[in-house]
Image (cartoon, rainbow, N blue to C red; front, side, top):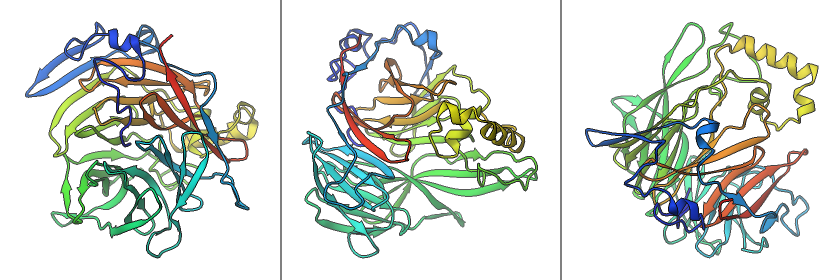
Length: 415
């Protein structure tokens, strides 16, 4: 996520969060923080259950969005479907990744469509899939095409600037596969998550060895930090099949990665533990919390199936039966505590805590670059954060027909 919250500092917030500016500075953690230093690593522990967050500065949004964009004009099929990401440019224009048409859409500061960049295809400047977009310091738009395993670059006029293939490296005769892209640095270096299967248990559980690595403009790889084990869910019986697929499920513990200022940050989806590292992988900050995972419920399984089921649908006999079957197949499934994670160039981190059991609300929690808590905001669970820049928040929502829209909201002073 490029330039997210770029103007937010730990001393004074450009998002007009006056209460944040009045909070303790970066060298003085609040009373909720327990800080220790060990071998050059800053360790901060937080209580982040609901009561402990109540006295944090609370953000709120304007009553209406600045604009909402849901259709591409002058097209027979104009609806948005498959939003893959978005990034604010310095001009305030929002570049949106549109998966169904394999292109980028530029939307100006009034919500008006500007142009499409890229097209569906395999030729130069064409895409078969979209991951991103990301932006470099000179506002080149970078897209990762996972289908064709290549990175493409465009300028904001739509001119195609070049492409390069992404071939996973080998390490000690072990071949990784490219699992996902975590972001692009200002200089254009791309951070990828590499993965390989390291163990397979008799009960069907698979352990994946994942590794962060940089790919630079010369197509050279540089590993970034130690490998980590990420277990899949255990099946009962081992050969069971079902809606949760092959086991690499959001209901299985994993990590979310982001470029964070001049380093890298990762958060655990099931324990809200954040680790900050340098670009070379040296650990410099560890944020630990008391959030406790709960057993997956009907809403969690419904979200796992990829649809925003209504409360009535979740309560139906058919859905309840499907959930019982999933519980039988995956008895160790717990609900993720983190649904999304973003970071800005200054090292501030925004964690989207998973919605409560009612499925109606999610909570954003801001950590400063030194690990201290800075603020919070509640918003509808159906919203997915795309980018934050200054005091502007870009989100996407999905309607009952699975069509999507993008909205930009102004973040205003705390209540």
